Image 1: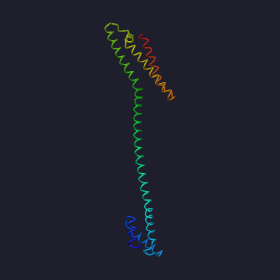
Image 2: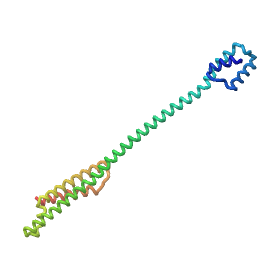
Image 3: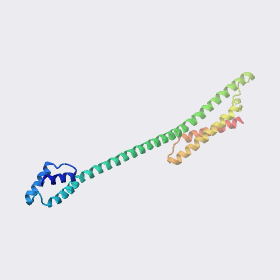
Image 4: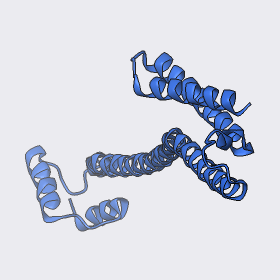
Length: 200
């Protein structure tokens, strides 16, 4: 293969031929006993172009598939981060709801007890003032006849009713027998009923 044919082949390939490629072409020439002016060299030039194309093709496919896999991986990571963010928000929201539910079942009876205690203290203070002012020291049932006595009884009834409903719901949902809440509800209902009965 002469220099003109090599130059045409390099122009077709858009690069210079390596020493190994030039040596391979010389071996082909020597093995097939071809002259430098033989027309077969043009066919070899076209086949060399195709050979180079198919040699580079796996690298191009590999680069393209690597890029596609990288894009898929980035998209999957973004989706995973988004799903994790949504899951975190959902867990926080459920935790807030659960905390409110737990605190409500704890704080409602405590608030009712505090209110009852405050009203009892107010009733005792009023009874003490009334007893000191009127001179009647031995009639303790006057505490119950004051407006706060009726309110204490009604609050105890309401608290017992709320606790009873809550205990019944938990018993229906969990199917376990918990004796503390129903017992407290019964005690509050009986005490509230007695207080209202004595106050009337």
